[in-house]
Image 1 (cartoon, helix red, strand yellow):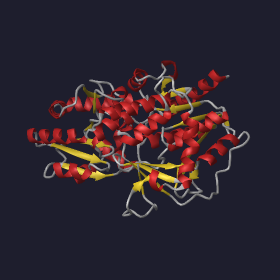
Image 2 (cartoon, one colour):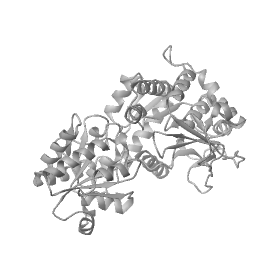
Image 3 (cartoon, helix red, strand yellow):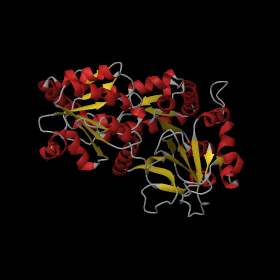
Image 4 (cartoon, one colour):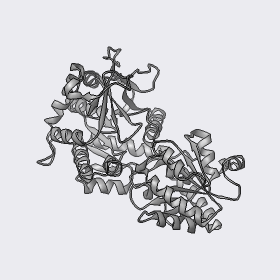
Length: 462
């Protein structure tokens, strides 16, 4: 764990937090960790303090203190501020551009429409008073150096505990096991509230992919197991991920599938644009599309090599890449001179046009728990090609709305894509089936499952 004396001095020398940490940071950390370390795990070796120490000794973290927060502190939600169940949802990195953040936003809108009390909470360096979330002034920021762009703000723990104790919540939901998630877990325990969580992000697989450390993957699973076994209920995005959680020690009767939804009005085949194709793809080329974070844990080096092989076999295939991330420059360099276009981050109607104007969607990730982009691509009328590992294969139909590659390799993926692109009629048939299939994934149905999860957790406590 490293430390920089001020938030904006990027060039400042870094020293260990143990050596130079401010008393404020040490006290804030102590207020959270000391009570949590006394919560016993369900296994003899599942000691939270030991797990934290071992994880921090192997992961490369960067901690940057922020100016001491002085308020104003969020006002507790008292009385009948909304319909039941009144859910306090605690999330790390709410500003991170990801499918997780979009899902949480959809759940909030569905809750508002249904009159359900869902209030999201986070921490920020300079909280925006007009934010729809309740934001605590952050004490500092953790960054995982192996996962560029992911920052987890550390809340003032005492104020979080006070806030939850004085608020009229029925149940607490933790989105991630980061600083806000841990503070929310402690607050729920002190307030005597049931607590549930969602397994959104596959951190153990990220450890394996980004750091190539099998021991660290096992250690991360141990920490995940400790965290999720504290829950009254756990939401898994797909059946595959539910089974994986059970296989790694979560209690089967507490893990339930809560899927995702997709906006089939925004993502629709009618968004196809010939102007887009003329600008980015030769009209006669078959356009393959990738949308997502451009980083190694998404298996993009394999996609890069696969497309190079594919381009050598056929001259009428193009690759469109939407998104940004630490692997972009390297990927662009590897594909220089080939028909690959990097379009950056697209959102809204521009993203919908990119989907609908392509011919097939390729998503080689083996670490995603679901992959909202797979749902969006199908809604736009694209056949999808996904890995046999992870959650994305659970939200498509192999051989009908796309193809599953059981064992990912550059040659194997290239052959599957070649076979798919050799049959234009098959592309169209699969695309039509994909659009039809996507209509079952609604935000309303996803939120209904989310709501029932909390109602059942409350009923079990009654």
